[in-house]
Image (cartoon, rainbow, N blue to C red; front, side, top):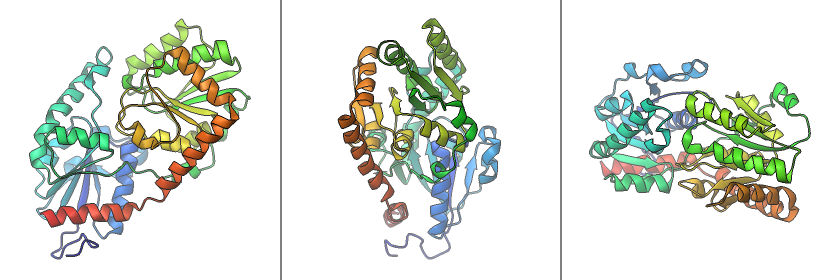
Length: 368
C-alpha cells in the first residue's frame, strides 16, 4: 500500500467520528463536518455520531446518535476529546483502529463556584485521558501545546493536526438587523466565543471600563456568545457591568452565521483575555475579517497567531486599555499588525488539509 492511498485493500472503507456534543457555531462540530467531508473525498464512508442529549436542532441532520454507532474490526474510529462523555466508553470499546483527536480539557478550577457538574465532567475528563492512552492507535492534537499534554499523559504516536479553519461561513451576507443595530459610529471592541470562566471576560470588561472612561468615550464593547455555557458566570459578568455603572457593553448572546459576519464587520478590534486555550479559532476568524487582534499569550494562542497580531501577558486592566488605545490610534502600528495577520491567513488558506489527512492515515496504517 502506498502512502498516497491510505485506504487498504480488503474493504476497510469506514472512518467515523464520535463527539460529546454537536452544536451550530461550535468549532469542534464544524471541524467534524469538514473532516467527514474530507474523509469521504478520500474514499471512506464516514459519519458523525454524537451523544443524543447534546445535539442542537439546527444541525441535527448532519449527525447520528451515538447509540447507533456500530464499529467493525476494520474501521477507523476518531474521537474528538475535551470532556468526560458517554462517547468515551464507546470509543474505548470500538473494535477498529482508534484515533483520539485532542482539543484540550479546560482545567476544572475555572468552574469552581460556577458549575459543580462541569467541574466533575472536566475532572473526570482529565483523569480518563491517561486511561485512554493504551487504547489508542494514534493521537492527533490540534496544537503542539495539546500534543505536549498528550505525551505527558502517556500517549504514543502523537501528531499535530491543527484545528481546521474554513472561511466559507464568513462569506455570507451580514445580518441586516445586526448591521443596523451597530450603525452608530462608535469604536467597537469585539469578543466572540464561549462565555465560560477560563475566558476571563471580566478582564476585558474592566479594561473596557478604563478605555471608555479615560481614553475614548465614543466606544462600545460587544460580547458575542451563548450565556448557557456557564449561567452563573454570565450573571457575574452582568453584575460586574452594573457595579461599574458601565454603558455601552452589549451582551449579544448566540450569533447565527450571518449575525457573526455582521458583528465582525461592525467591529474595529478583536480582543481575547482568555487564560486557557487549546487553539482559539475566533482569532483566525477575526484576522480573516480584517480586524487587528490582541490576545493573551497562553496555551495554543501563540500557535494560532503564529507571530501575527499582538500578544500580551501580565498586563493590568489599565495597561490593556492603553494597549487597545495604542493599536486604535497609531496607523503605523495598525498597518504592521495587519500585514502580519494577512501573511498568517495566507499561510492558513494555503494549507492542504486533504494531503495532511492522507499522510496521517497512511502513517497510522503502516504502523499497524
